[in-house]
Picture 1 (cartoon, rainbow, N blue to C red):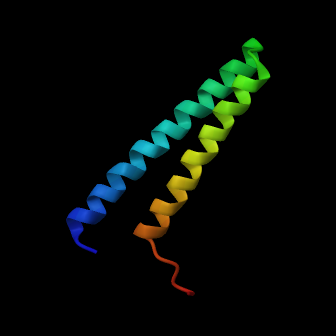
Picture 2 (cartoon, helix red, strand yellow; picture 1 turned 30 degrees about the vertical axis):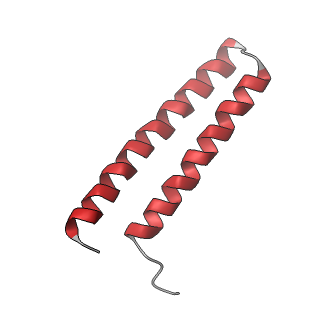
Amino acid sequence: MADQEQAALRLQLARLRQEHADFDAAVNAMETVGCDRLQIQRMKKKKLTIRDRLQDLEDQIIPDISA
């Protein structure tokens, strides 16, 4: 993988980590305030989707050595 490609993946990874943290904070705030449970569940689902994308990017950057 070229250095430029890896740098782009790392930048995208950092953005997704920040987005995941933002969703986490939003979900916590919504639970504290007592928002609609359905809305909270939707936010959690989006957060899980971001987590899956994070895992995919991490796998691209650091391949599984044992495979």
